Length: 82
Ligand SMILES: [Zn+2]
Image (cartoon, rainbow, N blue to C red; front, side, top):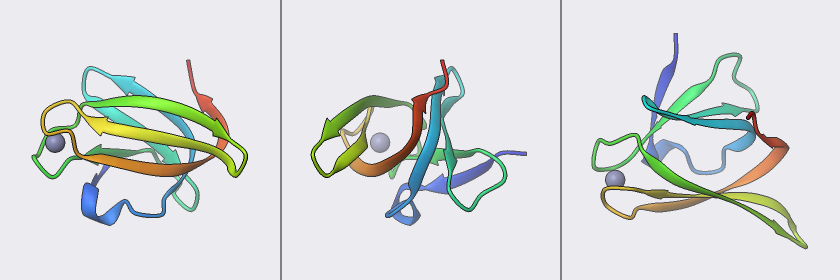
Protein backbone atom coordinates (compact mmCIF):
# COMPACT_ATOMS: atom_id res chain seq x y z
CA UNK A 1 0.00 0.00 0.00
CA UNK A 2 1.60 3.19 -1.19
CA UNK A 3 0.89 6.37 0.68
CA UNK A 4 0.34 9.54 -1.31
CA UNK A 5 2.26 12.48 0.08
CA UNK A 6 0.98 15.94 -0.82
CA UNK A 7 3.62 18.31 -2.06
CA UNK A 8 3.03 20.66 0.88
CA UNK A 9 3.86 17.89 3.39
CA UNK A 10 6.96 16.70 1.61
CA UNK A 11 9.27 19.43 2.84
CA UNK A 12 12.39 18.03 4.46
CA UNK A 13 11.99 14.44 3.32
CA UNK A 14 15.27 12.55 3.13
CA UNK A 15 15.16 10.39 0.02
CA UNK A 16 16.91 7.03 0.06
CA UNK A 17 15.78 5.77 -3.35
CA UNK A 18 13.44 6.96 -6.05
CA UNK A 19 11.83 5.54 -9.14
CA UNK A 20 9.70 7.12 -11.81
CA UNK A 21 6.90 5.00 -13.29
CA UNK A 22 3.72 5.44 -15.30
CA UNK A 23 1.87 5.79 -12.01
CA UNK A 24 4.09 8.61 -10.81
CA UNK A 25 7.19 9.28 -8.79
CA UNK A 26 7.79 6.90 -5.90
CA UNK A 27 10.17 7.80 -3.10
CA UNK A 28 11.70 5.61 -0.44
CA UNK A 29 12.20 8.06 2.39
CA UNK A 30 13.87 7.86 5.76
CA UNK A 31 11.44 6.91 8.53
CA UNK A 32 8.91 5.19 6.23
CA UNK A 33 8.70 1.43 5.68
CA UNK A 34 6.87 1.71 2.39
CA UNK A 35 7.42 3.89 -0.61
CA UNK A 36 5.46 7.11 -0.84
CA UNK A 37 4.10 8.73 -3.97
CA UNK A 38 4.64 12.43 -4.40
CA UNK A 39 1.52 14.36 -5.41
CA UNK A 40 1.85 17.84 -6.79
CA UNK A 41 -0.23 20.81 -5.76
CA UNK A 42 -2.05 20.45 -9.07
CA UNK A 43 -2.98 16.85 -8.28
CA UNK A 44 -0.60 15.24 -10.77
CA UNK A 45 2.06 12.70 -9.84
CA UNK A 46 4.50 13.08 -12.72
CA UNK A 47 7.78 14.81 -12.08
CA UNK A 48 10.98 15.63 -13.88
CA UNK A 49 13.77 14.42 -11.61
CA UNK A 50 17.37 15.54 -11.45
CA UNK A 51 20.07 14.32 -9.10
CA UNK A 52 22.54 17.03 -8.20
CA UNK A 53 25.87 16.40 -6.56
CA UNK A 54 26.94 19.56 -4.78
CA UNK A 55 29.54 20.16 -2.08
CA UNK A 56 26.81 20.22 0.56
CA UNK A 57 25.79 16.69 -0.37
CA UNK A 58 23.65 15.18 -3.11
CA UNK A 59 20.14 16.48 -3.61
CA UNK A 60 17.13 15.40 -5.61
CA UNK A 61 15.40 18.16 -7.52
CA UNK A 62 11.87 17.40 -8.71
CA UNK A 63 9.77 19.56 -11.03
CA UNK A 64 6.10 18.90 -11.78
CA UNK A 65 5.41 18.15 -15.43
CA UNK A 66 2.08 19.96 -15.31
CA UNK A 67 2.57 23.09 -13.19
CA UNK A 68 6.36 23.43 -12.78
CA UNK A 69 6.14 23.18 -9.00
CA UNK A 70 9.66 22.47 -7.77
CA UNK A 71 11.14 20.95 -4.62
CA UNK A 72 14.59 19.87 -3.48
CA UNK A 73 15.22 16.94 -1.13
CA UNK A 74 18.31 15.59 0.53
CA UNK A 75 19.43 12.43 -1.27
CA UNK A 76 20.80 10.03 1.30
CA UNK A 77 20.74 6.75 -0.55
CA UNK A 78 22.07 5.43 -3.78
CA UNK A 79 19.68 7.45 -5.88
CA UNK A 80 17.72 5.89 -8.68
CA UNK A 81 16.69 2.29 -8.13
CA UNK A 82 17.12 1.58 -11.84
ZN1 LIG B 1 1.85 20.12 -10.53
